[in-house]
Length: 581
Image (tube, rainbow, N blue to C red; front, side):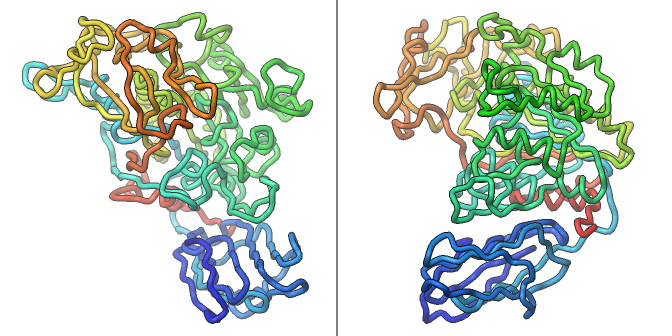
């Protein structure tokens, strides 16, 4: 457990942490210390130290020492009569082993170490692609659609771009501070800061206050690089701008739903990205604007331009932009799915947002902009809608966004050929319960279980017989795939792509959810009994591992079985980060 509580007969105990470590064994009082037992940080990485001692007599105090010396600068608070807290903001440790001791009201000690800086940089620039929800199985579906197999002999006809010419490959496991399961906030935080954090938290440790913005913070890789080296920082996502994954690299909060505060931190925090290209504008516009979620008059579209940003809101203007600081918002909320933007193009789905850029457009412009910084850059690119369509079990929309991501990875690999100081990484934050179990003969119509072919009757899909204008297979073809999910609510299945997205469930009028009648009334739709609690309206994340594919200098740091927190340290090693500067 991150926090260890014992009774008075346990007077003292040692806790050892890999990297930076803090922990405690308390006497009669309960003692909580953050960073947690088992944490690992870089030497010089900034963090907030916090000690909470509860169950004490009013007026009692604890003493906190590091290597036998009192910790200077601690701020003492009392959130309750029987509780005392000690907080030290923005501190760090040098490389080596250290001992933290707590005595007095609570008793315990901890042995901690901090990783030494890497002396030599292997990469000056890093492009980190995150396919939100893109586990190995999701990537496999994309491979089956995009590259397929030769029907004459079953041999593969190619690989995804993210699978081709890989320098090294890893399989990534993940977990939360408080669960073996994860959400996108704490998984992205693991990559951004090397820490395990609570579900729904962004780069903070727990504390005993109700304020979600005062939790102990830990510095992200983007903030370290900005502070120590002055590199350019870029965040790109097809999700709304303050969603968990982009937020994890430039913000700190206990609640990922603090959207307005996250937007503010983009412009007022430490990382201060030079490039921000997102879906949703609803957290950047004042409360008087239609669709705004803010509770104040802040208008970051206007304010960003006063700070030197060029603002763009459509693909046409994005492609024309030539600037050092670029801010783009291309929808009110998330981007539409790739197949809605590029294939179906249904006006009821797109609304007024008919000129949204593709992920490769945003990535290309981000690279052009960040390349102007001679110190290098860190660019995070998220394909955010993979996850947002796997949740409602619309695998076609999710997987075609993988294909959009793959085309974007091809662009980055081409760039890397002429910029050999660039490390390109492709990974995911978590997985979904998706699996391909057969082929599907669409000539028999939707929802026909007898149209599902297994083993030799699965044959080969015919994706690629027709391509869209971007060279990506059309979603509709004669022989498709039978794809399902292991963790679902009750819903109705048709096996085929629908031209307009529909949620799989609706409220049952109480505390639960029922299959969406609009889906169940479609031709061929049949009922499928779910296995999730009836209070769950969609599919959920799984504990399955995720891919990590690395290209270029420093790629050798990413291989084998990796915990997700190791991605942070491997990026730091590849870039020769010295957080003590």
